[in-house]
Amino acid sequence: MGAAESVPNPDHRTLRMMEFMQIGVKELGVFWKHFRKGDKEMLGVIQLDDFYELFHEKRSIFGDGLFDLTDIHHAEELDFGEYLVAVITYCLFEPQEILRFCFYIFDRDKNGYIMREELELMLRVLYHIVPPDEFTGNTRNALDLLEFHDDEKVDWREFNRFHVLFPALFYPAFRMQDTMIKMTMGQRWWDKKKRRLYDEKVRRDMIEQLALRKEHARLLKLREKRVRKNMGLLRYMCCPAQRAAFRKLFPVDDAEAERSLSEAELQAQKAKQREVERRLRELDAKNPETPAYKDYQKRKTRIEYAQLTSDPARPRRLPHERADRAKARRADKVAAARAD
Image (cartoon, rainbow, N blue to C red; front, side, top):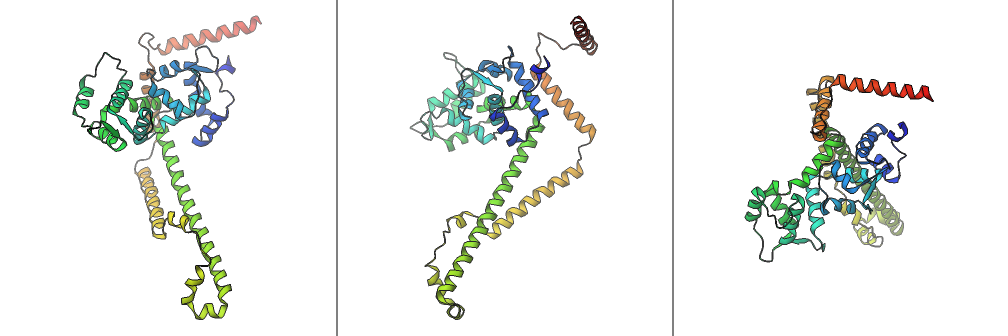
């Protein structure tokens, strides 16, 4: 029984996610515990319907599109690695990325626009409205107020404008992410991971820009040596106006240099990063996370998780009842061990 509850040996998908997100074994155990709630037969896999049930969602082509996006060719079931990839991918989406995901799923022809009928189909899928049922309430009002072009085509810019005018129109897509976040590791944990990934991206971009500038400077220095060799030292020193003509004999590819930042832009980016880090340090100093505050956040996360997973048909037991049940289980185990 103990072996069944432990985290299994990670496959290549799990290892990739652990390295990408810097997830430890303890944190991986939280995901595994949630996954096991859907693995009712304890086979190491869950059915797709059970996956949606874990997050209190109904199955739809919108949700199935997540598996296509993450290159999970499912056969109506998911193993733990596939579950982990799907959850982490969707939880890391920014609001604009969620909108782009919606647009991508229902842009069937991948031609950069969707028709009005496809937009209504998207909303029916998100709100689980099946014909002959029609839209009601705010959704109906929003659809009536939307202004379409004569050809009834909606490109990405128009689609994004609809979201700005009516933020609640695509709310179910954001609700799904919010539920995933709360039922796995909690909002604070995911925010911390997103900040780390963003900082790493900024650092990688700065290193890449510095490497490009360094390589360009090396090529320019090498070209100058060739120019000096062809001109001769005396002519090179006495006729600087002729150097440009000789430099054309040894062209340097400036494509990478043009894509790289200028010295002023690079310094501005560094200054901006230092300013962000300074403000974060000041905020941490003014509002330190005391042990009491950390305990409060843990209790808040547990309460939110309990509210999401509570089953009215199975009310929570009182503390002394849980203690009695645990004592009875221990006694049964002792009796079974003695019998063996």
